[in-house]
Length: 381
Picture 1 (cartoon, helix red, strand yellow):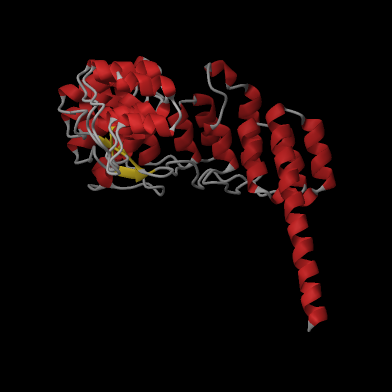
Picture 2 (cartoon, helix red, strand yellow):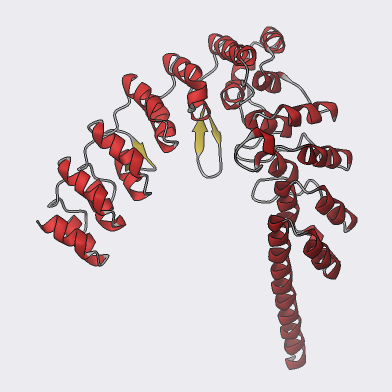
């Protein structure tokens, strides 16, 4: 019995050591991909070919848009449809592209996408947040080159995709064929109205007008502008996707047709689109009544260091004295964060230094706990 226990202990130790080694190699491979160091990537993969089964490495190859890395992984048995934190390699390539100019979407990345599709990547698998098919992800990114590659590879073009691409005729046919299409859900949970709102294909006037017309058709047919779909850790509604200055007309249409002004306000303010937040306020959004993750929206901006938005809210008359579930006001939050400039503005806007949280602590108590003498002095003056 003792010998059997000893052997089991040795097996467990060996397995743990192998797991640690695999994790270390995985990190090295991911860093090599991020640096574009294919030589190091190839060397590490050769020494530990089983790591090709790592979904994290495969999805990172997608984010890097590296066909050479995929070729090496595929030869070692990688699954091009693997999933990592909800993403598949094809979605990582489409959605995790470099930020900035459209010119950064190179022919190399498009060629990598073509190679993936030719070698087993399935465009109908769901991935990303919200969960969607690859061609919808391409439409949400607003990249016609990706859409064209996926079309050529046989990606399904149904009513949901047509809505995202601005195909009015196809959407009309879907509505005529199926009276429930306006409220139906795609395989990932998106409605056609989500697809319109999330689309970034409206770079030219014609497509932008087509997307607006599709939105009206869907709304007239009963589409719900408050319909939600699951994102990473929370549900998002239709207007969440339309909270962009380039979609102002759609943003206003959704509010006119029943979208939640409070949700519209939160979506706009988080993205620093204060002109859209202003529109939501004119439609009835009241910052003092809006809760974001259970907290007053001003408190949230202070909590997460969104200074520009916090100052804008104060200019619009938001109260710094509304408490969250702990009893903390925006003044408590500022005392905790340590931002002297913001705290001064909160106090100038009527912030109450004497208000206590549910533990009986005032903002100055919070500042003392955080060892912020400058704020203690400011709050005590």
